[in-house]
Length: 534
Image 1 (cartoon, rainbow, N blue to C red):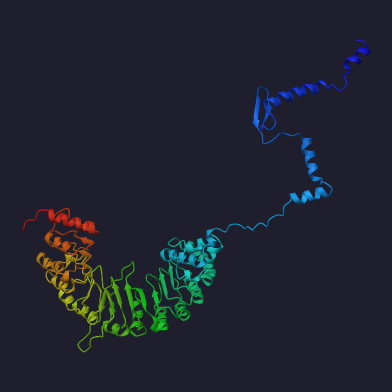
Image 2 (image 1 turned 180 degrees about the vertical axis):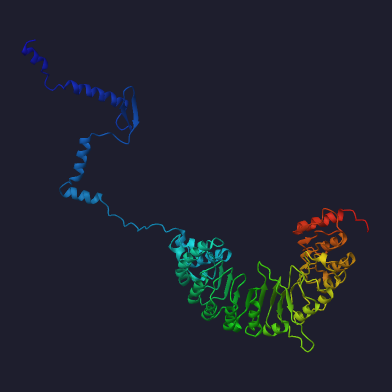
């Protein structure tokens, strides 16, 4: 082709669009027909398909978006533009200041939160609950830090019962925490209990003497290494301390006697474990150092001590005239003979509970019991389990008229003793109106004697029912008719022990707990055929 023809072929008419523009316009026309502008969709072409996708608005080119942003940054000039801008921009309203939501724990009043914590502390103790609650938030920490919640605390090393070396390390670690905890939390502490401390019990008590001026009760259980002067220091620093529990702990008698002499008239309760040093401690009580003592509890430890305890009854009555509870549990004790020229003691006019229970035969007789209780009309509980020398005749002459708990059971020793077979009616005829618990297990009373004794509960006067709720007849010769009569007469009977009762039908010789089981026993007794007479 000639050069001029080539130039004429390449020349296009004036105003005609180029070929690529015409092709692009055709495609745009078809795309506009498939997805019109403003419909909320746009087209996406893949290799073998055409996708119609939703869109929030028309897709604009990058240059168009950049020009729009540039126009927004350039403010319009002139008074009209300024007036329009002033009209289109309203004054912003002040927004309220909003901080982070503190939660319901901070909205709860502190007094209410302390009362809630107090209920939990009364049920489960302050530790570890208060320590964990203090980590929840600031309000809980403030509530858990109130000294009024830390009034009763029990402290025990975490490795108690393990090796000596591990226990010593655990005690030192706990002592380091107590050096901060006791001064900052225990200012209103009233009851302190230390369990299984072997090495650091004296430093802990020293901290308590410096910060716990309101302490009233101290218990040391299975504790060792107590220095003689620490108890005296505690007695001087705590003017309200009146109760001391040293059961199962190794403490020198000089430390206890010095403590009793320092505490003096404010001493109210004392718990001891019998050892070779108990006689010296009781000597301080007999010397009238603690005239206001109300509770005296002396019992044996895990290793039984066969050395008898000499107890001067009359001297104890003079030294502790306000005694209300006297417990000499599982002891082999010999009351000093009164002698012919010795006048009877003043008795215990305020005594309400006397426990002389023992697992072996002891030397308590009617004469000894009379010396103890001849001046105790307010007695409510009398525990003479194992005291086989005491007879119903001796109990009948006691001055107490409203006895509620009477335990005369003989456990594991009735086969080796000659038991009394008569006299049980003397007990029930005197106290059938007030007795709530009666234990006659192992006693050798005859069938007729037991029938007469238990028949007293069916003769309640004034239309009122007897108060009996627990009856132990294990190993006795009680009959089915007698048991039926007792159950029918005592609707509140909730415990009945009929184990090893040879005169009862088979299948009924067991213990019944609860009102339903006792009533089931009554139904079985009434429906069973009468046993043949022997």
